[in-house]
Amino acid sequence: MTSQDLRVDLISREYPPEVYGGAGVHLEYLARDLRPLADVRVHCFGGKRDEPGVTAYPEPAELAGANAALRTMGIDLAIAAGCEGTDIVHSHTWYANFAGHTAKLLHGVPHVVTTHSLEPLRPWKAEQLGGGYALSSFCERVAIENADAVIAVSAGMKRDVLTAYPSVDESKIRVVYNGIDTEQYQPDRGTDVIERLGIDLSRPSVVFVGRITRQKGLPYLLRACHDLPSDVQIVLLAGAPDTPEIAAEVEGLAIQLRNARDENGVIWVQEMLPKHEVVQVLTHGTVFVCPSIYEPMGIVNLEAMACETAVVATATGGIPEVIADGETGVLVPIDQVADGTGTPVDPDRFVADLASALTGVLQDPARAKELGLAGRRRAVEKFSWSTIAEDTLEVYRSLL
Picture 1 (cartoon, one colour):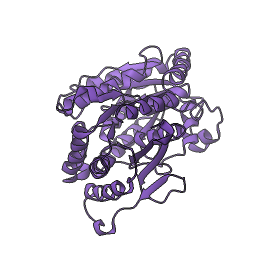
Picture 2 (cartoon, one colour):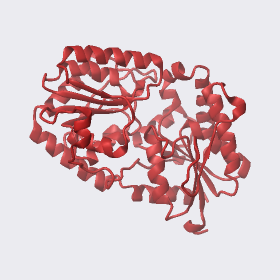
Picture 3 (spheres, helix red, strand yellow):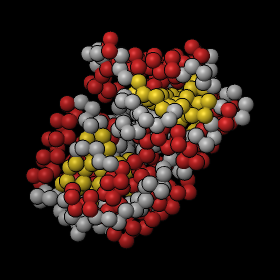
Picture 4 (tube, one colour):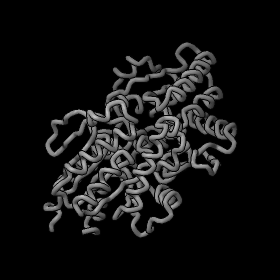
């Protein structure tokens, strides 16, 4: 079978235009760069898509009002049926893992799992899903332990897979990084978005982009910002809270921070901005910050680097494989509790180290510029989607 004859069915909860996290970004570009190499079909959740080869699946009406994880499994069963005729299925995140595993059994084809995160390392999701967390954990565990190949998005993620699922044969795990489209993500010197959002270009700025979830570490950042120089403007592109509890915590901390700084010291945009608008905000930031306490790789760091913005990020998960410490950004050390939550052993120390790293970059604009330029070079040279598509195709070929 030639590559062009190979039918690959990619399965994901997210796919454009319904994208809210890194997995959806990954699927968008992986599908695009795989299409010249194979017959690619995409199965996703949500509303009907007009793109050829893409099928979206709504929630089963019979499960309306049921636990969210159970509704996900209902969609997965429909997707598994829709994969008939494929040569290989490739699922992304627990939301799609049950579909991939069921399709493997039903159609007798290999199943590849890409691990963007791991449920055992996100125990706080129990407060989001309730009993559904047991279901999400089941879907992920069964799929990973029975997959024909597991793609880890970083070496750090590979280590996490082996720790969380020790029965998995290490030889089945391949490291294939996430990537970045450096044509779409490149510096935008325009100011229309900046002006609309009220960002003051005469001030140094810290930019955060991400969902409001435990793993993104936003509460630690909000505490750290109290120790930043008074002229610094904090720009938060942060929305889609996982739970009312984390939403209330972040809201309270943001109010405290606003009260402690001047009127325009904190700009908080809670709606999801279009990609091109995020690019402009990243471009004009003095420094981008990623305070995550759990991050298998962190595509958002690559996005900032591609926009020539210096990055300060936690030295956890796959982040140190993306950011060259001292060359393209600054890594903040963190000693974490060994309970799967990623919680810092000494939260006050982590907050202080985060504030110190940010201050160091903010007070040295020439260094910030050098870090940004080096980050762009690294993004272009090391993380292209064409390379990632070829590496992924090699994984498929090894199973046929």
